[in-house]
Length: 536
Image (cartoon, rainbow, N blue to C red):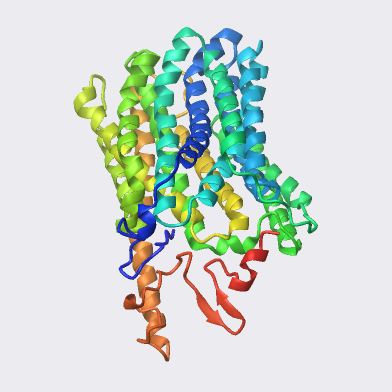
């Protein structure tokens, strides 16, 4: 996987001494960022809080274990299934408009779930909440990208954005535990006033979408239907596979149907004059690499949190609130380091924060393998929590910057949708694999439970380690390829030949280009002349 550096002559991003870095934001910029980050935090909070409340929901409505898991999975299904559509809608219809619609849908789903009188209505409410999140997540990221110029300002804004989202995942455990002590319904109802407040703030603070230029706006309906159906089937197949079996008829049938729909989508997009997803965007190595890293970041973290919750609550007998405070150090570390992550990107480039973050993940998961029947929280569990809290903001921020850097303004929402799809599908896939590795027993013995936790942790150790070390390996391969290209070029050594001293970005960077007879090509294969036309 390739994470590109938006490089200057010394191979790093524009640093803190760059004049742009000293530009101060006004009150409006700060408040707009608060509104957008608040919506992003709500997506994370919803994802975590209701997961903690699921046992109480199961007991109140007498749901089976397989039915209760859909309280969690329905949200992932709606979120992952509609992300690409939500991202493209923000490009075509306006990011502010889609953001407002998404918040409205999110509030409606939260209210439905909170007032539900049956398990089925709770699941429907969660599905609606996931669809709302699929609209707000890519539009929120594209609002940040579109309102803060590329470089130090955007890095700083994305660092703060990262802090809010990641804290939502971490603090959501504490908030969910506290609210569940009162009633599980509060984990739903809390989202209603937060969504309404964010909607009002967005109406006032987020700049209006540019006026339409009057040209005919085409929406690729066939592409939208096929890709949304494909993503829904893909996520559904993944989340139900642990209970049905990976090689069962239903799993193979659902995943096979998803593959056929994805093939149909590719065929439709390759022929459409104005596609929902311009396939050339997938040649942007930085975007694809960032999306793969995103899958590893959230997939391993959510799996770790799942195993940690089971270990502390089911194995050790801790209350939901005790477990919530056990995870609090992750949020505190993220709160400390995420706002500073953008400045570090300016000094180091994008690759090293990704490597450092995933390496910290790997060490954290290895440390957690020491857990046993009476392990000390302070000496066995806390160190892994701290390392995750340190690694998360650097890898998360770098992935967001890498995915959106160098992408044409008309495709920022789509790029954000692709990245967010990486996060959500990665979470679903990794958690499903981890669950299978842990064993499928309904009521395992005490010893079997601990063995299952260890086996699940080994899976996420492997994923984190491969993700970490793939970054320097890909960088070394890119340098060798660049060296070979310069050696074979008749103009090798000239100022424009791409030598290290020329300031040319590394292979796969958003600015990496090669000249041909028709003009300069960007990393995703577009000519500069066509860049502005690609999103229409």
